[in-house]
Structure formats: C-alpha cells, structure tokens
Image (cartoon, rainbow, N blue to C red; front, side, top):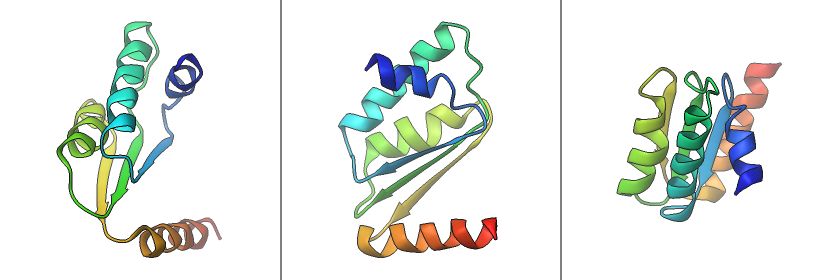
Length: 97
C-alpha cells in the first residue's frame, strides 16, 4: 500500500486506469489519494478511467467522480475488456503519432 500511495502522490497531470476492479482498487485508490493530499501533495489535475463490463457504484464514485472534483476528468467505459482496452490503446497511439 505504501508503494501505491507514493505513486498516487505523483499522479498530478497523469492518468489512472481501473480495468475491471469494482471493489478493491476503488477503495484503495481513494484512501491512497486521501493520504497523499493530507501529506501536502498536490494531486488535483489528473485523469481517471474505469473500464468494466457493468456500471458499479464504487468505481463510479471512488475513481471517476470524487477524485476529480478539484480538477481533472473522470471517464467510465462499459463493455467487454477484450474490445475496450485495445480500442483505448489504439486511440492513445493515434494521438501520440
């Protein structure tokens, strides 16, 4: 958890992807983000995205909405991972070239 919290403390301007975790990662991420902010790290402007087969409350709140309220953007993609993840990767590669 300490390693993850240290990485989250450096998330400013970055991206967090939650692929298929409906319970554990959303809870752990929100706690790590709270710790980082309480220790004085500026973690406000970043992008989060959740990829899942169904819409769930915890990822929607703890990954997409709450963490990005101070600035940043959250996205929730619903569909099969074998389709969504390659499409997302192709879109990123296209934007980088």
